[in-house]
Length: 161
Image 1: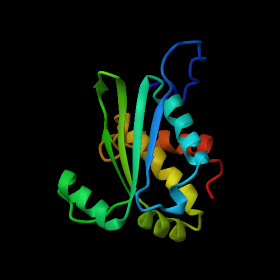
Image 2: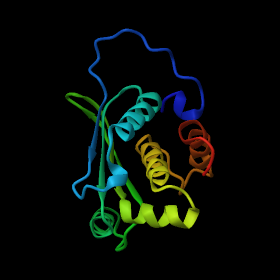
Image 3: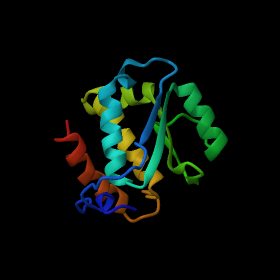
Image 4: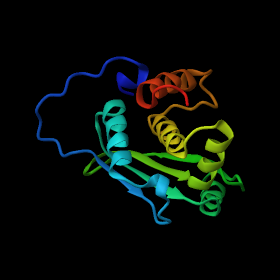
């Protein structure tokens, strides 16, 4: 895990010939909340800071039916959820940080329940997914991931609204 992931300042960048970080946003259903260069730029910044050795990261925005299928296949849970993360590994091309799936319909419902914009909810879920790809697990870490995520939300998302 990087220094930035645990709240320390990242090392300053030095000139290098490393290829740029490849962030893939797959949006086959063309959800408007999951479009735009700004979202990709934001996510690229998050991943570059938290996982400076990563070469690639991908996200797929899906509906509830697809999310339920993924959750059933990989976790044995026959229900939809908001975000699923699949940590990556080193590849011949470099380090793939991982893959994240986000259910946009679930993000919409959660945003409405919390009184916030769907775009903010999507970014919150992306940040959560990145932390899981870095190895954090809120189900077994005595609150460590939650504390780190809270700090990172303030930094990357601003005030909680």
